[in-house]
Image (cartoon, rainbow, N blue to C red):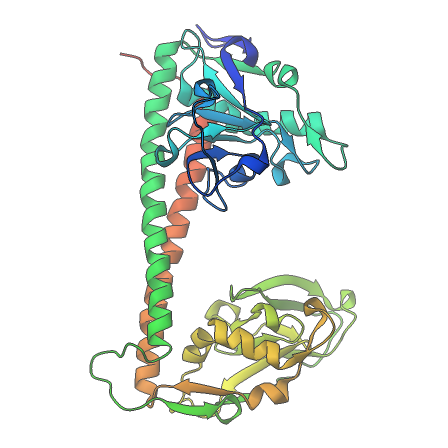
Length: 410
């Protein structure tokens, strides 16, 4: 049963549209009026990667292809058969900074008929999981270039609340959008601050108050040692297997397996504070510290566990932070060999001979680690807040746009 006052309508009945203009690529310039192409919509908003422009001398009337801030555009052509990985059917709004840009072919501007639907609600429908699934079903099975016709798009069915209720729903959801936008900006600022601090603190370009003295150049092998804690194998035991993510994203619990399910019986225990290196993935940044909650887990021989030779003189956590820097990625690459980067083998002994620069005292090393840990914890908290806000908005939107939860209209 439909909520009172609500009705179904085909998308084509409640919108108007304008197809993009077939601009020729040989007319593109590096200045003039921006042209929005499909390649500009590969993220959730219009981006500025390799923008193109045209110079219009007035010989061609292009007013009908001019976009305004807030306009909704939709892609009708893509290159992959599954919408999640494709550009087909992606809805994007025009940001204020490119107001006045021109719409290229294979894109269509979707404008709401204000007798039936407001722009904010229309955009929500075009970004909904139901619409994504609908388009995905249309193009499924196509192996290469895929496209959707406007006829197919316009037969998509939407459930319309009355206009006053639409406006109230949009106002409620905009509150969540502001909270999400604010959290995204805080997160971006914190991430940028972390990047800048790492570049300064981990190289000695910026010293913390109270610390002096020249940084010293030492070999990795003079600071760290490999540790092995072989387990006593029992087929009846369960083993908590760790893995190290690429791009310095940390150590995780990969899976828990019964001993009979594991072919390689040679395992080692880990301890919190171990610095793990994946022999096969280290060139991709697969290294990191074992956190406390993963203490006494297990790794195979495809991992190397390192500890400080003298914890009173060298902080392993400082080394973990240092390992995230690009220069350390390069060192692991120099100490690996193979035909392709995906199949390179790590030469650990060569790695131990590599030089690094470190603060002269363990106190300064630990202070640097503490500062970076603090901002990393702030980033983790913001990421958690952002995920929660998005999930809460998604759940609320699902209720409001289906009538399961009604709003009071003044």
